[in-house]
Length: 495
Ligand code: NAD
Image 1: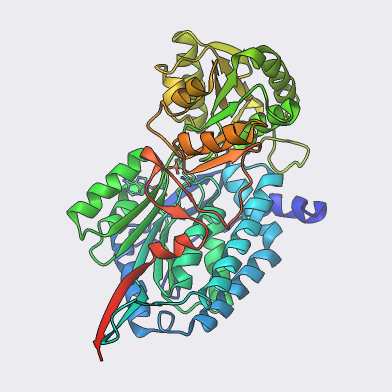
Image 2: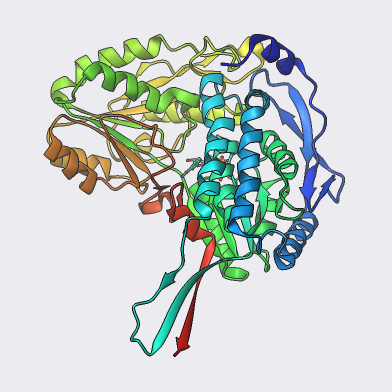
């Protein structure tokens, strides 16, 4: 909950034009160009960010490399790095309300979700990896007694991180915290549509004592600064969260530059599968609405396909419509609203286009799907429920990344599995059943990096999040994420 006085002050506050962090300096773009930031709350300009260039990326990577080679961060004892990252976690918490409002004005996420997941989620992530880093040991290999085999984990050097506009602080922290904890230097490229809170995080990182060059932030267009970072010859690892289209490009960029390791966390078309024996159908219906409609569906693991057993289909949909009709859409800074704004005019018209196409292909718009509150100038949409979807229709296969639910039904467990796996994606899934054996069978058979059982969402930092199929090849969260940012080095010592 944000203090109401603070909120009314922060929501009016002018935001000064933002520069980029390269080394210890806050710099404009080398070209002097800027990008106007539009708030999805009212469609009005909020401020500007620097439109970075390939030259800015060169400067940022050079600063990151200098820091790495100087050892001011990379060779600090893990317990010392831990202190700095814990201070950063504290600062994120102390500034949580201000950071949440800044982020919401930038990307429109509803305040309840934004406060918890963004500054507080980022703080928890920095704390998790800070606490981990002085407890992770190397290995001694099981050699014959005539030799000693040591297995070290070394930081890779310079890490490039490219992140999307939904949940920028949380997803940014999922990459920055393990990469920095391991002693790497990072060049971060936030999304054009949501850079402000990550720029503020960088200020707090300097305040926490992160040495110059350990974290650099270059803002700007993906096709310019993103490409320059991904093709850079001095970046060893690229960690990316975003769309499959861009993910594919990054693999090409790596192949034509220095074969850097590329970790992709991509999109999804996640099935939420409700069997007739779900423990509580009311809870399942609420969760199904929440799984696709919170943050206007702009959640990578959104349960965007509802697969419901035929015998309960009609009654379950009645419940779902009733619940969805009560969801309030509007100003994301108003805690009374359940759903905030869609990121942009363009995304909103794409969402509406997906609905129109589904109806054209034979689907039925059971609820919602229209633009709302146009008079505010902002980008709002009523959640849409589309039934009659078959596996070959676009809405069954393509990620919308908006509040649009595709509904299908099934008659058997085997059919549910076949429908669930009938997309190129494999990010997340939900299964609702009180049959323990069936739950375990479904966990094994559904192609997804994360399967929820009798819930949807809410997994914490202790479990990895990553895609199967074309949802990616890397994992954020948990101790496994540390592996992405290290090289294994073996030493063979003859005794
Ligand atoms: P996007 O792929 O358009 O952009 C992501 C980032 O890539 C941005 O910073 C963008 O500027 C940059 N970029 C764009 N073109 C580039 C290029 N040619 N070279 C290098 N970088 C480039 O994605 P988005 O619209 O910001 O985010 C939505 C997507 O992210 C959805 O597909 C969603 O599912 C996915 N996502 C996945 C996860 C996950 O954990 N798997 C989490 C959140 C979002």
